[in-house]
Each structure stands twice: as structure tokens, then as C-alpha cells.
Length: 547
Image (cartoon, rainbow, N blue to C red):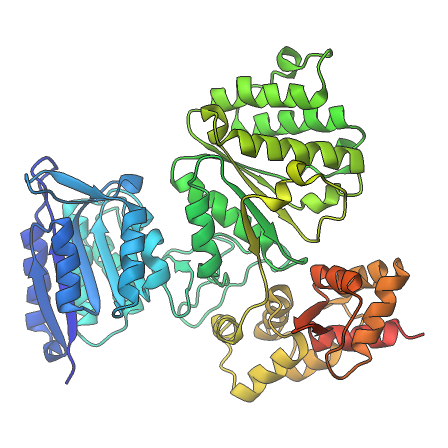
């Protein structure tokens, strides 16, 4: 029988508060000895662990479960032993890269970080671990020990990691210790979302066979298990936003998840102690002229940051609006805040029709980004911009923010992600049923979430969904009609889309029209040819774009 190895690492440096770590280890071993299934587990213990011993222990033992007990300090890291006996802090970034490298060597199924404020470390390494547990605040000795007792009592009796986590939290509560909400759990079957034993509103948790659904018309909430992670994208963004003067550009068609990704980047930055602001300034009243727009931009941002608005002091009528806006940032806003500012600008393509404003504003963003290379004050500004279509306005190469920084494109979910989303809706489908769903809407995130929501709620069967999806009924009617209006307004685009939907095989299109249709999310490339993104679009537009 292959036994699961549990590697317990402890560290209590001499310059940190003493912890009763040996008592916790003793209780874990006692739980193992009491268990009728103890032969399924092997417990290994390494004490006073230094950074190099962390590496050596994991490479030597290759455990399925890693348990760390000791001190944590938010963004500063986990406290291991130094050669002198004093603390050496292992940062979240270093820990994340360490587990990323280990993932190529062997699989660690579960990591339990039984240390204060270890949620930050847990968040950094969860892309590489199936299950991970951290603490969202300080946790006392007694609560930490009781959690371990409840967790391992459950695990050693053959129960799942999820059940072990829930009963670990409950063990704290049963002892009347007010820290049972401190542990945080991530389940990661693809790369899953975090859940908490006490779900807040607007989350969905499969718990006691009940499903609580969130609003599908808005972005996916930060703590939602409906959120399918994109680790190859998110890790790049999380690393980039920590760089001085960073600029991240997120491009994707409508309803692909741009806003959700931006929110997660800002959330990650906030956890590092950064200031964050999420703005969407593109209402018509803000777009009357450049001066009004830039003043409104500065006023709204000041309000978001909780900083007193001082437009009258920093706006000089003898200077250009761009210079005034730059001065407001450089001389006031960025100096008024202590930490870096991550500024998220969503749906910026809404400004494209206002050519003069767009050209000057985007040139400003480019200048501010470039200033970050040399000026310390501008290094505090980190930009995240998102848009749904290609940039059709004319911008000089050296005045565009769309050709610098980190470029991120969000696409459809792959087959594994689609299956994961189906499972999270509590649907136990056959491969044939999954293929039927994919055959209609492929991997489009919004279309999938809408369909699965209605089916899981019992409002539709899969068969009924397939029948009404390409019609004008409420399910996708407004979403599809938006694209119909865009195509009807452009004869060249309309003709190109007609060619695509009337062909059973991929075809070649004029490169300009293919470029536009692809940026709208209506087609996808197959080598040098294109085809409809999904069957839903083909069926819907075949009838409505008929000659």
C-alpha cells in the first residue's frame, strides 16, 4: 500500500514569540495513533527549519501533504530559522516560485500553513497545489492546535480534505475560541476558487447539497467559486503589477472576463498594501471636451482614494489641460499617498469615438508610464487598462499606451475548464451532454455561465436550452442583438460575416474585416482562415443577415 506522506515543518526563531509547536505536533501524532486507518499515512517531522532545509526536506521526502507551523507576517513572508537562530522571512514571491518549480518534480496535494497572516502566502502558491489552507489574520496557539486536531482526526479516518477543513474550523468553535473563521481554504481541481465555511452573500458554495447562485449579469465576485482561474494569465499580471511604473493591457471581446481579471489584479495589489482605484469614466457628460474630461478624471480619482480634491489649486488656465493633469498627479496625488497606486481603467474603448480626447488622454498615459523609468514619483503609478476592441483611432507610435507594457488577451475556456464550470454548478453530465453544450456555445465564459445558471436552477433543460439559444428569447437576445446592430451599421463587416456563416468550412476573409470580426469576438482563426466563433452565432446570424 502506498502511504500518504505528511511532512510537518516547524520554526520558532529566537526573536519571535514562543509557540507551543511541540504540543501541536504531539496532538497530530496522537490523532494518527488513535486512527483505525493510520496505516494509510506516514508522519515525518522536521523542526527548526531553515530555508535550505525546507528545500531539502521536500525534495527528499516528496510528501503529499505539507504542514507548516510557525510565524507568518503578511507580505513579509513566513518566518524560518536563520543560522543564528533568528528569523529569516521567506517572501510570498519567493515561496510561489519555489512551489512552481517543485510542481515540475512531484505533486504536493495539500499545503496547510498554520501560521498567522499566512493567507498571503497561500494565495501565492495555490496555483500549484490542489488544496491549500492559510490563515486570514493572527491565530492563537490554542486555536491553531485545535484546528490541527480537528483536521487530522477527520483526515486520519478516511474523510476528504474539504471535510477535514470544515471539522478543523468547527473544532475551534466547539472549544468556544472565537477564531473559527480565521482558516481559509482553496480547492484546486483545475485551479479552483477559495471557499470559506461561513459563506458571505453573493458566493456560491456546494455545501450540504445546496447551491446558492450569484448574479450572472455582473462580474464574477472575487470570492466566487464560479470563477474559473486562468493561472497562466493571472500569475503574469500579479508579478507585473509589482514592478515600478507597470502597465498591463487587457484585451478581449465583450463578456470574456476583462473586468473580473482587472478586479483580481487590483485585489492582489491591495493585499500588498498598495492603493487601488477602479474607474470607468466614459459617460457622455465626462466627454464634452478634453479639459472637462481631465478635470473630472482627477476629481473622481481623488474621491476614490479618499484624498481632498484640489483642482483649483493645481489647474492653471495658462497651461494646457494635459500639463495641468500631469501636475495634479505628480505634485499632489502621488505625493499625497504613501504607497504605490494601481489604477484600473475599464472599457476604455468607449472613449475611442471621441477622437481628440482619446488621442490626448492615451498620450498622457504613455508619458506617465515612460516617466516611471526614471522618476521615482511616477514609479508609484501602476496602470491596468482594459478594452474590448482593437484601437481604430490614429495614435503615433511613441504616443500610444497600446504598444508598451504587458499585453494580455483573454480567450475562451478550454475543455477542462468547461467541465470544471459544469461541475461547480452541481451538474453531473455525461460526455455527450457536455459536447452538446460545447457544440452550441463552445467555451465563451458569459454564454456558459448564463446557460449553466438557467439549467442548474431548473429553469431549462439542456434540450430546451439548445432549442431557444439562437432565438430572440430573453436568454441571449440582448447580447446577440448588440452585435447585429454593429454588423448592420457596417456593410463590409456584414458581408464578411455573411460569408463566414454561410460556409460549412473555414474560409479566407479580407484581412481588415477578419481583424475587426475577430476583435469583436464573432470569429476565430483556423490557420490563415476563419470560422464562426460558435454555432450559436452561425445559427442566429444566418437568419438575420440574410440578403
